[in-house]
Every structure is written in C-alpha cells, then in structure tokens.
Length: 472
Image (cartoon, rainbow, N blue to C red; front, side, top):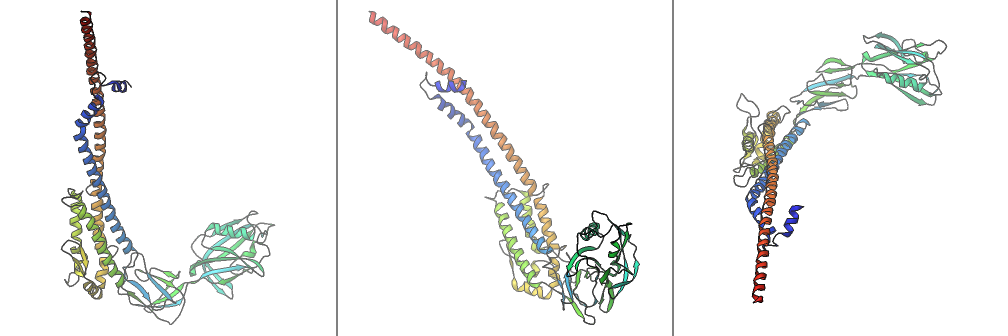
C-alpha cells in the first residue's frame, strides 16, 4: 500500500511520469530474458506434443496389427464339408494349414435328464430330510434306470428343511449346490414337474436318493435311480463316438478341442456311415488387405515422424530416440521375417511385393503380392502369425520408441521436466522484476522529494527577492 501511495505521488516534484519511467526501465531490463524463456517454453511444448503424438501413433499401429492378427482372420481356418454334422473352427492363436482329415460322427454326447411325477402346487410342502446326489455310469431302458455304477467323486448332500421343502425350494436347493446338475420346473396339463439334467458324457449319469425325516415323508417321490418309481429317465448319459480317419474315439462333450491340433470341433448330429472331410483354407483376400493396410498405416506414421525430425523445422530434429525410430521403421520392409534354408521362399515384406519409394514411403506391387499369395500362401501367413516376426518386429520398435528409459517416453519426461523448470525460472524473473520495480520506485520517490524541496526553496527565495525589490 505504501508503494502504491508513493507511485501516485511520483512526479509531483520533477514533473516527470516516473511510474512509466520505472516500468519502462524494469521491462527493458528483463525483456531479453523473458523472451528467451518464452521461446524455450514454446519449443519444449512443441517437443512434448510431437513426442506424445508419435508415441500414440506407433502404439496405435502396433495395437491394430496385433488385434487383427489375434482375430484369426489372417490365419488358415479349418473347413467342414458338412457343417450340419460337424462344425470346425480354429482355436485362439492357432493356425491350421494343410489339414486333410476324414471325420465321422457315429454318436453325439448326451446328458441324463430325469422328470418327476407332477404335483398340483409347486409351493406346497413335499417332505423333509436329505437328498444325496451321486455320479457314475448307468444303463437305461424304457425310461427307467436298470443299472448304476458310482464313480470316484464324493456324493453331494442337499438338506431339505421346512424352509425349502416345496418343489420350488427343492429346485433352488439343488441349483445352489452347483454340483453338476441343473434343476428346473416344467408345467403341463398334469401340474408341475421337477426336471433334473446333468452334463454330457457317460460318466455324468446320476442318482438322487432321499433320506426322509420321520413323520415328514414325501421326498422319496423324487428318487432317481434303479427301482425309482416316482421319476422317469427321459434321456440317458452317453459319450460322443467319432471316427478320425477311421479310428474310433470317444469324448464326453460335443465340443472337442483335443482331437485335431489347433481345431475346435462342434458335433451337431450323428450320421453313422457319412464321411465329412475336414480341410483348411488360406485367407488370401484378408492377407492381401492386411498388407495394403499395413503399408497405409506405415506411410502415415512415417510422414509424422519425418515432419517431427525435419532438420530445419522439426521439433524433434535433435532427438536421438526419434531418429533411431525412423531408422528402425525404414528397415522393416527388408527385415527377414521367416527363415528359409532352401533360399527359394520370400522372407521379407519386400520379397512379397512391398516396395520402397525414393522418398522412403512404401507401396504395394499388387501383381507381385498376388503371385506370392498364390505360390507361397503359407509363408505370407507366417509373417502375420500371432507369434510371427512382423508383429514381433513392430512391437519391438514400439517398445523401444515409447520406452521411458531410452525412448520417446524418456524424451517426453525430459522435455516436461525442462518446461517445469522454465515455469520456475519465469516465476523467479517475475519476482526479481517486482523487486527491482519496488526498489527503483523508492529511489525515484526520494529523488522526486528532493526535487520538490529544491523547488520549494527556489520559490521561497524568488518570493523573498521580489519582496526586497518591491520594498526599495
């Protein structure tokens, strides 16, 4: 407040605009430094922005390629000559090439299903006690279980009390155990029936045996097993029986992933005596599109990187990480992606039709690419495989470029730290300027006061002389 008061009275003695004079002197003193700081801050902002943009671009390129490869659309897929009998698909990450197998579905896997006699009220009490669920193998004839052999798994006990002894309560109690069977209630003209279904496979047959509380009988009507009269076995548990190139094998499920390497089979229907041919198909069109998309994405990234590293205007022209990334990208088209001991196969992108222009950009020789896909489809596919050299090479470039130790990640951190230091320097310069402004204001205030005193003395003397002259 004191400085403000002084500033308002400055110049009253000298007649000069001392406030403007002080501000001009202070601004001139710090102009060069503030300009240098501002220019440096602008440069750092451009470097941070450019580094972040290139990091995001190379990461997006890498992610897009990996997503495409992992989708399986670039890998040979199994085919079935009769998908109404068996469907074939590739397991995640698997590539099925040169597959040629005959397949016969003689029997599909089935799950045991049992239904109880109908009751009129699904909420009415049935009885209390305990139900024991036992798994094993069974024989079934005319909707009745005629034989059962328990398996090695421990039986599962289900307590039925007054709180859950209705058909609904029993259904919920069975399902709550999550023991491998599913209970539901079916309604028909006769009333409500408890339906219990297990998992597919001969070893997943089951019995349900009631141990009733004295005086609260009724659960025995839900017994499932040999001699049970209150339930019917509407479907028997059985394994799937298939023949691969004439060799019979069994499986407990209709979804089979361990029979043919890399292939998932889904059994749709049994057709004993009908041979289904399983083959494979190379995704020629998808691979061709992938090569063209790769070249397009590469050229977009290269354009950004070349602009950023331009020796005259590029914000990253002195950044070693950016220059190293540029060198790595330029070598990608001639990098050996597959091994070939014969010397006859294309092993690089350049060899399958990815040519390099004079300016460093890439282009696709469509005729050469088509020839490569026709003559060497397996080799081209191998380049784009999940664990193949092209995705790996691009990932390695991405990791190096975005590294926070030696890549653009480290550069970005360094530029950010420098920008923070610039902000601190600007605050220090501002503080120093205000300190100088205060000091000079006080100095000029003292000078102005002295001038005012001299003027006052001068005025007094002039008036005195005038008084003396008039008295004469």
